[in-house]
Amino acid sequence: MVQINIEYLGDLHCVVEHGPSGQKFLTDAPIDNQGKGEYFSPTDLVATAMGSCIATIMGIKAKNNNIDIVGTKITVQKEMMNEPYRRIKKLTLNIVFPKILNDHDFIIMKNVIKTCPVTRSLHPDIEIDVSYKFSTI
Image (cartoon, rainbow, N blue to C red; front, side):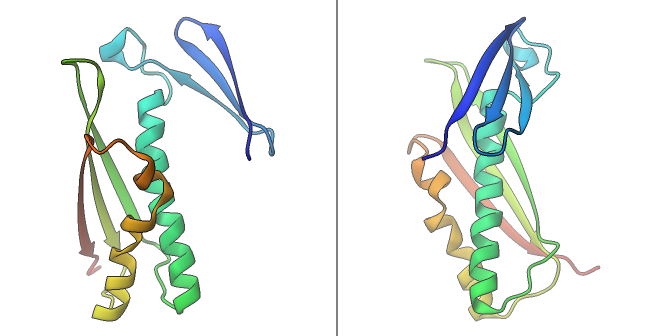
């Protein structure tokens, strides 16, 4: 179990501390929800958690299967909705591998989204759209 400590600082800012490491960062409400958008919002962190979880699980699978994915980039776009209540409507992920993978390796990487603990923990009403590309540069 990991403990996360959060302190509300006022003005819609919080300081968040990762218990085991002591690392800290600030959060803020987004501009469209009375904040200044100066830092990650809580829902930004959900999108961040999903993208970094997928990258991490891909890294584990790549290491275990001797697949080189160093330099893989993931972009996550978060879309909010306000009715009937404010929540994340959709997360769109664009995964770009730095080189072309063979079919076998690509299937291993593509199946990671099914095993990502963050993805599996999200409410099923959140739409998730994933695209995969290979960099040719």
